[in-house]
Length: 199
Image (cartoon, rainbow, N blue to C red; front, top):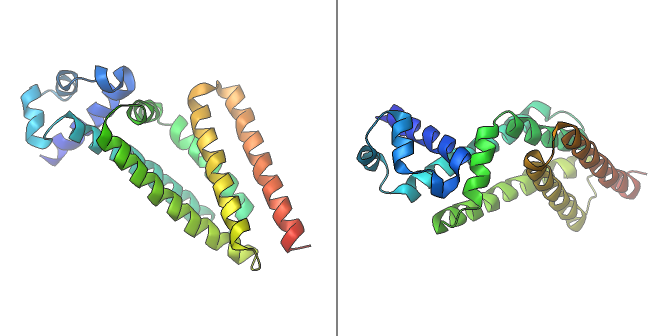
């Protein structure tokens, strides 16, 4: 039963990536899994519930990737952690274009439940970033003000969001350029911190 549920979520992600929310019919999802469409309702009460489960999986995968990057880079200088996270956003989403396309399809859908889930997820993710990155900043810059810490983290979130959307908008060469520019912006932010708190 669990395998069928997971297969339905994966089929939904694939169909959302190919056809968008409205084009991803329960019939197409059921055909992908090899079951009859009414069988889906044994696992999900409606398309919206399946939609939220698929979206949750995509968001959780991204969150887990960011946690792994942070863990793998924890002992490095905080600027390098920021740039590793930007690179991680790119590699995670480029490595799973089907999931990225599905994510974009789901984010732009008109379903109220997904908007609520996305908002809650983004608040949780941003809160996690503020706490973790704030802690890292505080350890490297013990005298950093709360306002400077918040400013740096907010700018990082903005840069990360821009890089994410660039994955879909730019070819590989231009995306590389966007990554270089993102890292240059991060470097400037840290130069400002170094000037203010270390020199």
